[in-house]
Length: 320
Image 1: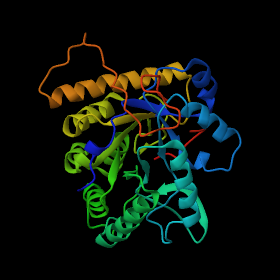
Image 2: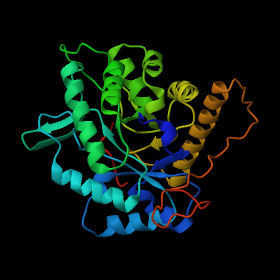
Image 3: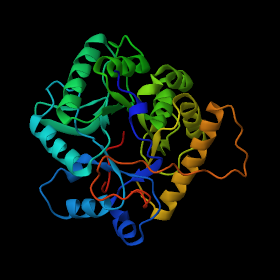
Image 4: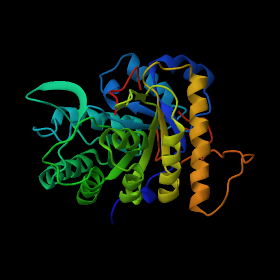
């Protein structure tokens, strides 16, 4: 049976777990559906990162998102890295693990960026084989995220949506669908964002990312700064109308605001999500209709999380 989002919990609308918010989260236990953490910030032997993570896990579900796997790089994925990642998976009981369609370095040098891949059949086969291996090794569903990009390859023979769809199908993995990245790359490269959204396998979308960006006139940089613009929210509504209710995350990693500002942004996303679901069902959501929080997902024996309680990273993520 092919993997699909029907097999994954809908966690609602969450935010990234970031250091500036630790105190407020642990003291106030705000109403958050879930938190997303950056895996690499917690792949350590102990200390404050794991102390704070364990306190969060007592009250909130978390999902893991990585930024340094570099699955399409010239070398095979690092086995020591995967072992540490699997240890963290067991600790968090994350329902899935995600990273990016990208490469990040070569020859032992890490470039600390999410670099684009040439969209070719050879790259599809190599990346799909690695993704399948990683999912089997981690023993948890695995998803890859479409990245923002600022250059293309002359050797590419596929569109980005064809490329990521082929990998997802061949590897039988999920997609982490970043709607802001679709908008950014569509502007930078002159393709139609709605075509991208319509053309991916919606049943494979496990999670959606929303974020702000920086528009420099001639190009857009995915900075994860500021509020999600209305054009991106409209693309999100269209995505939800096609895919159904999908766990959605607000990313805000530059000029991080106070927690109430971030939570208000999550409520904007929840409203847009409800509007997208209304379109899917042929309904009209009036302006006076309140956004409805998702029913809490039942975790698979997650560490200390209590159904019905509030739901719940680190300082920053490499933008993607």
